[in-house]
Image 1 (cartoon, protein in one colour):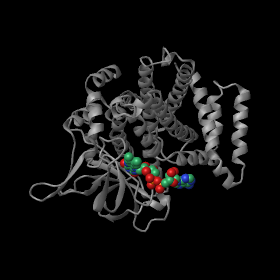
Image 2 (cartoon, protein in one colour):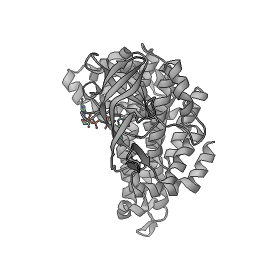
Image 3 (cartoon, helix red, strand yellow):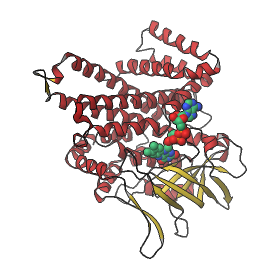
Image 4 (cartoon, protein in one colour):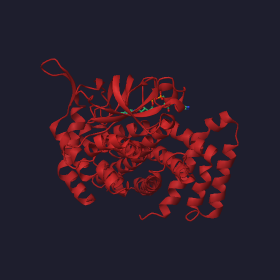
Length: 460
Ligand SMILES: Cc1cc2nc3c(=O)[nH]c(=O)nc-3n(C[C@H](O)[C@H](O)[C@H](O)COP(=O)(O)OP(=O)(O)OC[C@H]3O[C@@H](n4cnc5c(N)ncnc54)[C@H](O)[C@@H]3O)c2cc1C
């Protein structure tokens, strides 16, 4: 299945993806010719060819049909070697289908789930709307959207500032039920269809953003105006559901980051094998050769870390609050993976451009795209700061590092493990401000340590 996907991308997908990256982001057509508000996203036709193929292959339906996330993330890994951005719509569609399947009332599931799991081109797409203009890192303060109870549904009013896959048929959105507590504890997760029960538009697209990358994806701003919404789970456990949606996308982000780094390295290698300098192919110069070798080891380690986050998520994705220890271990590994793989992708993409010399900055060589795409991977689904601080929190509050060291005990020599353990313990006992201020170097060290040790247990 993965080989077929790869072949198809080499023969068909790559050319389409490159053209769309150059041509720019889709358009929104707000009114039809009779003046009726329609907010339709106008995609290049060929984009739908590559987009729909992934859905047909099973980026979403396989997860729920196979009751396993492995095929889904393997498909994303394969596809994002060619187009990392296209995994954004797949991820947010997965992030809509999973909470619906897990927490949706039976009536909601039978009304909406089959459309998200279709295996043909009529498949519905999902979207995940959390971020508002006041900020995405601090959702407790940033989410101003309010939900008011209305018979068997809710009416949502507010503005979402970053909405990837705008135009999706169904979204999950964070909102605060009227009168609920301030902060993250008062947030709930709602299902928001594109159309109301009477057939009119249920949300409005204010505009689409012009971005440095993921150019094919319509990332917009969305207005909710008494929009019909359906509560998922209970109102008082909303923040857990929101974090579960983020878990799915942070793990996807990690897998995509590794594929992107691998692609940048592959492009750098094929260039270095042809380019001559000082009478030799540049790959034959010791300095560059050493860089390739150590980066290849870095790639193996990054893959192991990303895949460990997939493996653990696959164990815990159906868990519900209150969570088990295994879930907290997953969270720590997922924060390390989201943080470190994105950093590795950015750094590798920059280096791959440098290997191309001045030609690396030229659009026609294509390698500059990987740096543009990698910068988005480092920011969305929570920036590096967020991952670092959340990793610190799950170690402090849930002692997740102890479970991590148990996990690594097989691969890591005990003296190295003890040393890493005491570094973490010493850090956790620092005064609060200092602990936070110096957290990045600790998390970086822990992420690299974990990735290197895990890579010893993974096939090369
Ligand atoms: C292309 C794209 C598509 C997106 N699509 C979606 C989407 O579909 N749905 C969605 O909900 N969101 C989406 N986002 C939003 C994304 O998740 C946010 O941009 C991200 O979470 C950061 O939030 P912010 O941009 O509001 O930055 P802010 O939260 O304002 O943060 C600004 C800076 O301050 C730092 N910072 C914040 N708090 C701290 C702290 N305590 N300590 C240290 N530093 C801190 C941040 O790390 C960041 O560097 C998208 C973003 C992009 C770029």
